[in-house]
Image 1: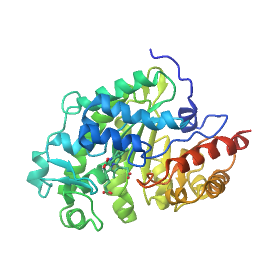
Image 2: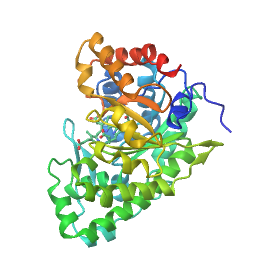
Image 3: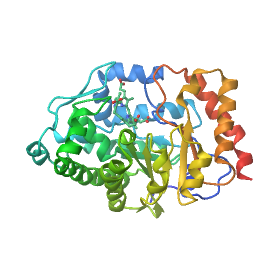
Length: 355
Ligand code: 1CP
């Protein structure tokens, strides 16, 4: 069994256990806003080379922890590793989003998609998790992750990033059985993938439902939440004698937090459009909450950042069950020192909320 964690605040907060201060980590904490990340990516040649080479994935995972006293590491990878392993021809053009060479357009395309074996096609991720756990040596926990079936399906069907989701919405309303078959396949692939990550050492797991907010309430329940719920039900929830907490994050999902709280997840990510006080009332202590500083705040000077951090802490209020984070990922042109100011503010201002 691995050595006990020196800092288990994140895991305790996700399980709503008392902590001395609010733990903090940042979505996309390893990435383009860090000059050392840009240097690693230049050396690797591409973003995909970083993801598929365990030593490099480990190196960039640890970069933000060398700069900042963060309470967690998150595996450096992408939600599109599953499509990559399905063989649809994934590429990332610099400065642009992901591209899928052979998008999924018909029931026959869905039927032809394989369910990747994490021990083979996604072996590089499993190996990266093991390596990162070893290098972390119990300093902080490691978060593993995947995209939600709905969000990954948007990329598979649209062939890349989308604003209007025209193709997948046509499928949803005109050919729902085809979309259900695709989502079902993604549930199988994602459940295997996340269980392989926790078996390799990931101590918490997060599902990113970045585009769930593009759905109507009824479609959200049927095409996103129901499938995330199936994944949660299929996850191994105890490893190394400890519970593996699961975090669900639907961007734009503030109106559905109550339904999400019944999904079996331990914690919910909240974006900046919902007050944590409202989120806490809606979920009634059934789950922990993670969030929700507007990433745009990091464009202001440290005094403003500090005031906005305090506002988020006050919005959640006293007691356990809060993990500090942004409401979505940090943007590539943010000054790293501003992130340092955010983390320092959480450390200084949060202890009184736990006395
Ligand atoms: O270096 C580069 O040019 C690539 C930029 C980049 C990075 C740093 C991409 C391409 N992915 C990542 C890493 C990444 N992606 C992580 C790393 C761990 C960390 O947080 O430090 C994570 C968790 C993700 C997850 C991810 N990828 C999501 C869900 C979270 C979110 O931000 O909403 C999504 C939607 C993606 C798809 C994706 N991959 C990359 C980009 C630019 C995008 C978004 C494209 C779009 O907006 O549609």
